[in-house]
Each structure stands twice: as C-alpha cells, then as structure tokens.
Amino acid sequence: MTHVGTTTRPWPLGEPPEFSEKSLLDMLEVAAAEHFDELRFGLIVTDRQGVVVGYNRFESERAGIRRDKVVGRDLFIEVAPCVNNYLVAERYHEEDALDEELDYVFTFRVRPTPVRLRLLAAAGSERQYLAIRSR
Image (tube, helix red, strand yellow):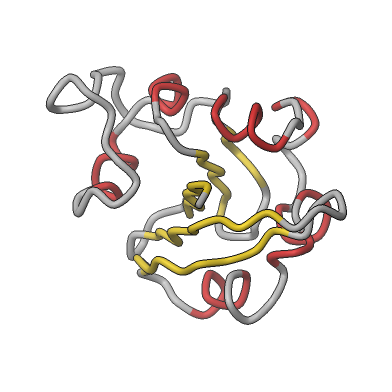
C-alpha cells in the first residue's frame, strides 16, 4: 500500500480501532499505511480529487478486487461508480471536514450489498477516508 501516514507507530492502544471509534479519523491521519491492513473493516483512502491512494486488505477481500486494480484510479468514476452521487461523492466534494455514518447498498457487480459507510475527512488534510462495514 502507498504510504499515507506520517509515522510507523501502531495503533495507540495496541488494537486497531473499531469502525465506530470516536477518534477513528484522528488515528487514520497519523497511522502508517501498513497499519490499515490490521483494520477489521474496509478502508479506501483517496486524495481530495477522489483518486485512490490506499486500499486495505479487508476491503480487497470483501470486494474481490486486488489492490493494484484500485490504487491510482478515480474512486467515483472507475472503482465504485455506485457511490458517485449526492449521498457520498458530493459530500466529499462539498465538505472540507466530514465524519458521517450512513446505511448504503453497493450495487457493484450487480448483486446489491448492504453496508454501513463512514465518510471521513479532516479539515485541511490531503486525504479522505471511506470506511466500509458489512451489515
């Protein structure tokens, strides 16, 4: 995975954070990219233009798409066009700071898949995060 964090230290409490962890965004912002594979939920990291710069193992296995097929591509056009709408993509485009959860249904690969999404972005950060949990 491309290095996105600024340090190589593990999660503060030794265990990776949970999907609904209050300080998840803060932890993601300082974590080294290799620690994203320790998460027990999917994580897609994009730059502010929507290009994928990180994609963790959990999401790769859940979606059945290899990391090398996702990183470097536009999330909303090439990777997951089913989230290119006002509920997800527009939120990232319109808001500098974001921490919202919502129930969603991926329609990727024809089979509808119910998920819980957490849209995360820190004000002034170069990155945005899409956390994904099955429901």
